Image (tube, rainbow over all chains, first blue to last red):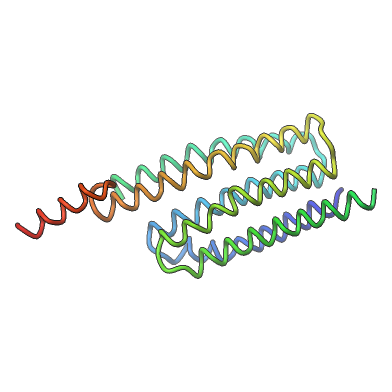
Length: 84
Length: 112
C-alpha cells in the first residue's frame, strides 16, 4: 500500500464536503455545478485509491466512471435546460 | 527513492489543496455562473497534478496507463461540461443562449 495516494484520496473525500452542502441545499443550477465538481473529484479519488492499493481490478473503475461522468453530465444538463 | 516519495507527496498535496479550494469556492460563491469557475481547477489542474505524482512514484506501466486514461477523460470532459452547463443555465433563465435573441425575447415580453 502506498500511503501518500491513500492519504490524498481521503483528504479529497473530505474536501468535497463543501460541494456536497451546495448539492443538497442550493438551487438546481448550483446543484448541477456541485455535482460536476464532485464527479470529477470522485474519479480522481478512485484513481488514487487504485494506485494506493495496487489491485489491478480497481484500475478500471475510474476509467469507466470518467466516461460515464461525461455522458451523464451532458444528459443531466440537457434535462435541466429543457424539462426541470 | 526518498526524493521520488517527497516529490510525489508534494504534487499530491497540491492536488488536494486545489480540490479543497475549488470545493470551498463552490460553496462561497453567490450564483451558478460564479460557482462554475471553481469546477475548472478541480477538473483540469488536480488531475494533471495527480497524473504527475503517479508518473513520478510508479513510472509507466499498464496499470498507471489506465489511471492516466481516466484522468485524461476528466481533463477532456471538464471544459465541455462547463460550456454545456453555462449554456443550459442561460437557456433556463432567458429562453435562449444568444445575447441578441435573449434581448429580443425580453423586449417582446415587455411589449406584451
